[in-house]
Amino acid sequence: MFADRIEGKWIKAFEEVFKLCQVKPNETVVILSETQSREINVHITELALQNLGIRPAHVKLVSPINKYNIPIRSTGASQAIDGDLAVLAALCASDFIVDLTVEGLLHSPETAEILKSGARILMVSNEHPEALERLLPDVDLETKVKIAAKKLREAKQMHVYSEAGTDLNIGLVDAPAVGVWGYTAKKGTMSHWPGGMVVAFPRSKQVNGKLVINRGDINLTFKKYVESPITLGIKNDFVVDILGEGVDVDLMKNYFSVWNDKNAYAVSHVGWGMNLKARYEALSMYDQRDTNGTELRALAGNFLFSTGANEFAGRTTAGHFDIPILNTTITLDGKKVVEKGKLK
Ligand SMILES: [Fe+2]
View 1: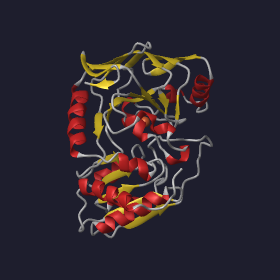
View 2: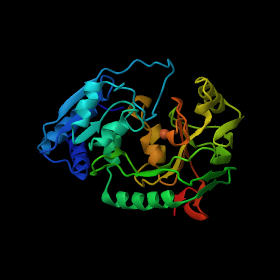
View 3: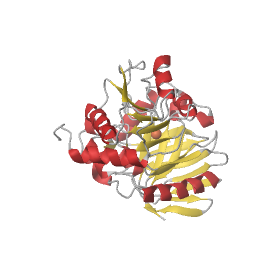
């Protein structure tokens, strides 16, 4: 689809994002990658940082063995560091880390310790640079996401419903919520590019109702638009019914069950996309190896539903689905934040 050569415009795009992260020449900057990383992004990162007067260090890991023997996609929970103390020491001694691992450090076991050291992390999602270029973050997006994250943090109850039949109640009392706008300049924090979404991690036994994954919604683990509806019955966080006909429901049932782990059926995070630059059709424009699907997570107005690990509900698992649902209405304590798939 693309010629894998570096374009000057991509170096400029990376520079813009690093400037938003307020990276300074006197800071210690590490480019974290692995042998299976998208090499072009690693190279562009190095060149862009140099243009800003920074001489970064590379920490390059050998991509880990997949201990599950099951294909894992876009979980945001890289296992690449695997507790390596030398690597951790290097990361904790840095000011700014550009995370180019395949899965990203978002939910990795080592991330909390790295952030506690004061380092800030920008996870560059494993996208083709052509997508990153289109989805440059800006201050306007930061402002909007911060407002939405505050609303989500303060809300006690989320209700999600649609004409397709979704009717989901989510208790949010004490649920951690974060906004992601695509860059971070603050010590000890992490963001990812592309950004433009808010997510909450409900506490245990807070999610009940029905979720209809309608034709045209997206299963990002499989990187495909759903072609026949799937209805999930959810009781006290756990998917207890999976109804529907066709390949999509079969794929989903299979991938749920392959983990042989009850927690794989439970809700991970819930939220909505806020990035007006993100395009619905994007997934059809890239070969699967050229996209990690973060554009669809950020798609403005989608209800981002996911299953899998939720440490705030006391559940860990490696199985993970991220499912952007279109055309829903989302309310927080009765107030609409998304109406029929459009941001309010
Ligand atoms: Fe997720």
